[in-house]
Amino acid sequence: MADFQSKVTRRPRSKLERVVEVLHRDAEAPSEAAGLTRVLEELERHVAETVRRALPALQALPLNDARAQLRESGVSHRPTLDRILLWTGHLSSVAPSEGTLRLVVRLGYPGESFESVARALDAELPASEALSLARRANGLLDRHSRAICLPVKPRCNKCCIAAACGFRGIGADPSARLQSSS
Ligand code: SF4
Image (cartoon, helix red, strand yellow):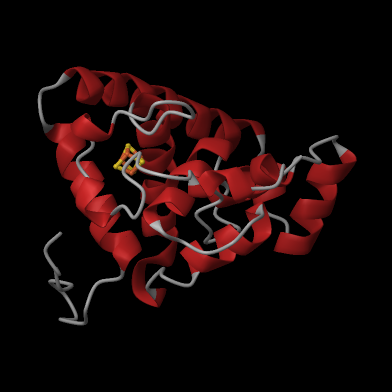
């Protein structure tokens, strides 16, 4: 995978930025997987809008209060909680779904739990665009995990980021080390 540089700052791009860029380009290409990606993107936008409309009071709260209110509302699943806080703008975190955890651990990211893998991803968010990249990564990685990087028999021969993957469907699956995030 080419070692792109940021067009704005000329700093070397992180692995996360390069992977997101390739997934974004692939989502533009006409293919079966890209078609599914576009449908899922629409759904993602719809969910984000629903969250934004339904939770205006939440958005006005500081992070810790917003987190506490969500917990009081019964949102205890950490990935879901972080994902909502990402879309309300409280949290610049990739907030990986279960599928994204599987995918990025296969790519070579360290960690065994939601917390440790999420921190490894977030460490690669550039300060200048952390929230926007986190939102793009959240959606694109999750969709790739559902369309291509399947739990069993990942479709590595159709994978646009195979060059960045340390697994490629060969040998022991690194995602077997992941613990449940519930
Ligand atoms: S090459 Fe295979 S295992 Fe690696 S990210 Fe792509 S689909 Fe997943």
